Amino acid sequence: MLIRTLSPTYAISGQIYPDDIPAIKAAGYRSIMCNRPDGETYDQPNAEDIAKVARQHGMRFYHVPVSGRAIDMKTLKGILRVLRVEKQPLLAYCQTGRRCQYVWEAVNL
Image 1: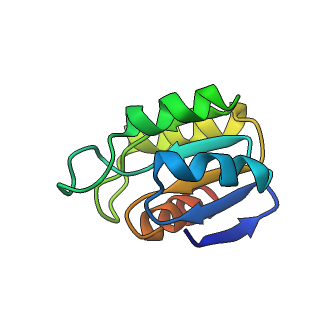
Image 2: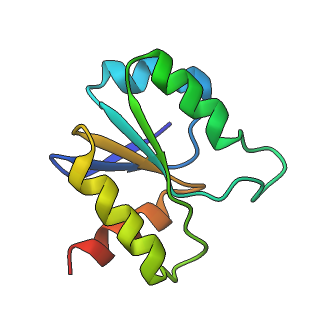
């Protein structure tokens, strides 16, 4: 798992797994946002499986799926809502981290 910091409160990563949660918490992250739709590939863990482990470790978890680079207004509003209320710093993930970077760019234009 490679984490890339985009700001003091927002970092991105490719796909994470439930077993990664203790290391993510130990690295100082307090919230996780999944920008990946469930079922995108056959081998990805379900967001709820990751959410369950995150909650067991006292972390908040948000699932705001983004399909490709296009972010519709409903999704953008959901992301902005998360960024206003989440415990910081937040780690956002998707398959490679690119969508999470697009999300960051979209809300910071």
